[in-house]
Length: 491
Image (cartoon, rainbow, N blue to C red; front, side, top):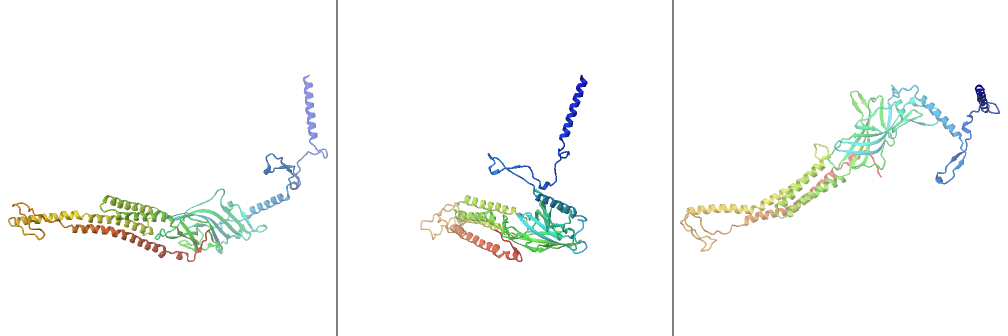
């Protein structure tokens, strides 16, 4: 019974398998059904749905027929051609050998676009700048034909596969590339073999500053581009004829104003040979508004404040002393703060002259009070000196003529003379001591205060006129710096 059941089960499974095989063939040609790939680029696709996103909510999606156009096939063909072109571009190319090997030097045309100027530090004498460095040279090994475009933009990674000029910044202190969100590099090749590269850099460059006129100075900060390994026989840099240095009109700096720039050559000669070098000098004029608000105006007010003591009574010694010392200490502190952000140079700067003269004025005001106080106190000292002298004179006279009557005095009356007993001072009533000399000292002290009220402001005014005329007009070298320069026009 069990064996019959197994046989029936086996027959049923076999029938099922036969039915499955029969259904897997096409009735027309008895072949298995397969997906049809022929005419794929022109075949019709099933009905798809397109959503109207402006009226998405509550709307029934619209229907459309989507077809694959021949443009997709064309793009695929172009991609294959581009892939084939790139695969064969570097066949036989050796990046270790420069173009025009053992012939003429490679002429590299340089162009710079300045994105921004950063901080310009006087203490370290450097400045920060963000630029696009663009170079163009000819490499006949990169020339191509059979491609529709005149220029082909390549992936930045291919820069590692070609020869490049060994350009570096001679006055660079620190530099870095930018890689957000991808490497900020560009490579483009042309049919005639020209190679164009661009890279974004952030640089910290040294700038030798001359601060004699600080903060009314004009600085020239250079950027030098030099070849490191190839000498003049192999490589030559030159500025692009049209717009060699591009500065956007909206370029601004916190303390400086860009007047323009100069282009020049700075070919270096070492014991290993002569190396090509080009430079651009940015002409920067300092805007002194910050220093007027933070240094010049406060120091001038402190000097004026020191003159208040000329109107205070000379007898009020504590008030005048406190005012004089306070102004001197304040000016000393401000002078130290103004020099804290400057390098320790051996020459005198314009701001040093100003702070020194202001400190001299407040110190002179303090000394003026010392002189006035000294003269005002001479009255009491003179009385004491005169009394001591008179006592000595009378004592001597009594010792010599103690028994003789005193001669009549011209200033006293008939009863003004009396006699004294032996060994004692005469009881002669002398007239009051004359106060004319003491009063003269006091008048002199008042006169000094009165004159100081006029002399100090007048002298400070004259100093201001001479100071500003000397540094703003006489020492203005703007025309000298701008001679032969390309002027910069800002918004």
